[in-house]
Length: 187
Image 1 (cartoon, helix red, strand yellow):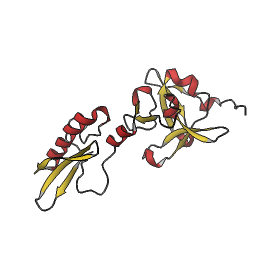
Image 2 (cartoon, one colour):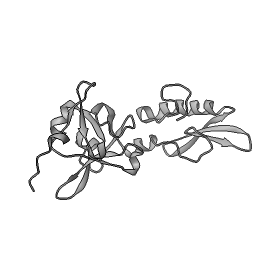
Image 3 (cartoon, helix red, strand yellow):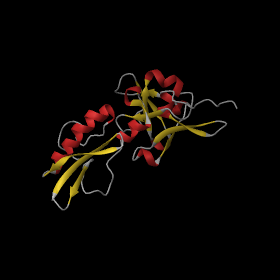
Image 4 (cartoon, helix red, strand yellow):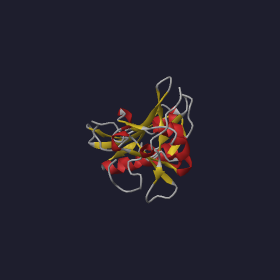
């Protein structure tokens, strides 16, 4: 099936303030960012915005592949991750920032290290819970499938810092920290 030419208003264009960055127009008035080096390849297709449930507030950039009509995600296309086992995620959690510096390949195990704190828990921090009988905060982390206790603390933020130290040690760049910049603010 021959492809139709991409309209000029849907082709990537240079970002007005960021050098070596291009903007990809998506549907519904959204845009995605890519490296200028990828603009020619990405510009061969019309890309759409999809309010994907796993992408939280930003949604995802995708196109349909013909004749299979499978969705091709922009971040996977940029890194040429064609096999289903190839995993790619966004380092900054901005799912519409598809620059190579923001994308990283990972394994499913790395993805498990990078999960968000679950909603509806006793603490506002990841890896921290309230121990009602002792009236203290407990810090814990799961490494290699085993839950490890990191201690009991009087202050919730101190327990969160203990979790962050261990998460950074065990998970490296894939750790989702409570205080990414080292400052005391809730995740």
